[in-house]
Length: 172
Figure 1 (cartoon, rainbow, N blue to C red):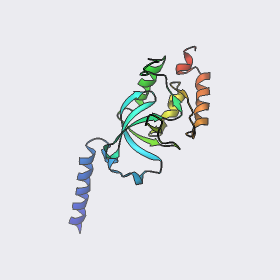
Figure 2: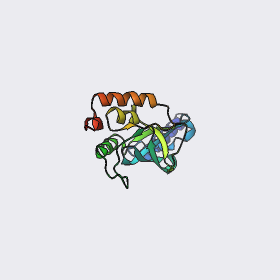
Figure 3: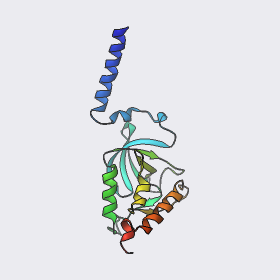
Figure 4: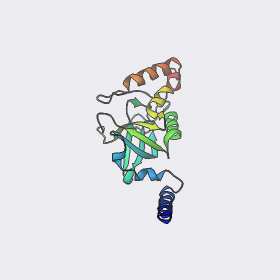
């Protein structure tokens, strides 16, 4: 009995070491039904700009994700070019999430007209969408029916404006 238990324990530990390889790759092995409804776990592969990221979901599928309820200044728009505070917003998002595991929370509408996955993004206990607004890297952009945190975002934007944080300190 002891040998069976020890053998099983070694097998499980070996699996975790191989699956992990120093990262949290084992999270990819957790099937979607174990996540609460409307939530996904993904690894951020690249930050496109302040409010758009590329993630890899479990089973290796890549998705372009647009953060819901916020809008950061443009850095890659074909006609607008680089807007004031756009580079700073992109750099902040990159420092916060690139290469890290995030939780994606969906709302009512799953995709926008460009096919991007619409999501609230969390890294640990940090609500990324809200943090961008709170620090003045983003303004509120509410697009119904995805309005779950609209009131929170509005109050954070008002505070950022009062404190002249980020883009609100540019004097526009």
